[in-house]
Length: 180
Image 1 (cartoon, rainbow, N blue to C red):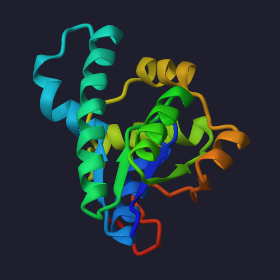
Image 2 (image 1 turned 135 degrees about the horizontal axis):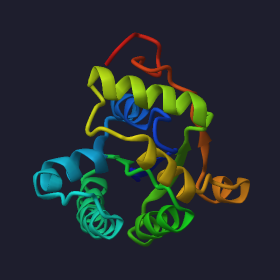
Image 3 (image 1 turned 120 degrees about the vertical axis):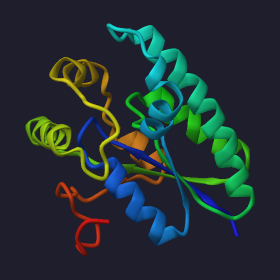
C-alpha cells in the first residue's frame, strides 16, 4: 500500500488546521503543523520586533525535519498530513517532489476562503484562543502573509491530484459533527 502525502494549503485563517485534523481521522494519518512546531520550539526566543529573516530561517529548519519525519511515517504506511501553510508554489512543489522521489503519492488540498472572512476568523481566534489557536496574528502579519500568498493554479492542482477542500466554518469539523 502506498501512503499519500497530503499537503494542506490556504492563506491565514482558511481553516487549514481544522481541515487537517479531520483529514487525519479520515485517512488514519499523522498531523504535522508548522504553527505548533514554531511555537513549541521558538516562541520563547523570538525577537521583538519579530523579523521575517528570523522566522524564515526557523520555518526552514522545521520544514526540513518535518519532511524527514513525514517520509518515515509514509514508509511505515501512515499518511502524513502536512499543515505547513504552503504559501508559495515553490514550497508545495518541493514537498511534492520529495514525496514522489521517495515513492509516495501526493494530494494537494486547497482551502479557498475570501480574505475578509479569513480576517474575521483570525480576529475571533485571537480573541477566544480556542482549540486551533497557536499565536496571535496581528493585522500587519495577516497583510504581509497576504502579500506573499500564491494560490495554486489549475495546472498545479492537476499536477498534485488537487482537491478543492470545502470551506470549514470556524469551530466546525469538515464532517459537520461540531468542534473537534
